[in-house]
Amino acid sequence: MTRSTRPGFGALIYFAITFALGAYFTFAAVQGDYGLFRRVEITAETDALRQTLGQLQIEIAALENLTRRLSDEYLDLDLLDEQARSVLGLLRPDELVIR
Image (tube, rainbow, N blue to C red; front, side, top):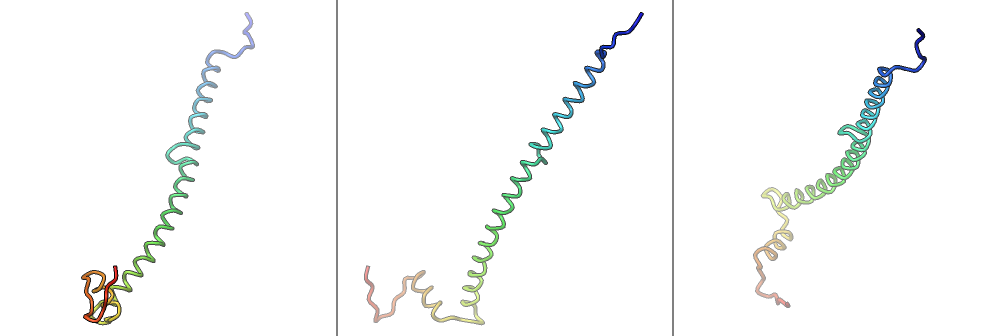
């Protein structure tokens, strides 16, 4: 009795499983938690956060400057006068307020 030259059912299952695993790993490499798309998202988010960090550092430097100018060691009288006028609503007796 001669065997047929057709591949057996086991070989078909082997190639189907191999193809399914290959498709799964390819999908995971592209769209998974550590895939290419997620990496692009993380890179874009990093750039946006770096811009925000730069803006916040500029704002902190400005606030530190104002704080230093109002400290006991270095008192800027013009800044103190401006802050008293804006926060407390103080005026000098010789000033007129126009609203």
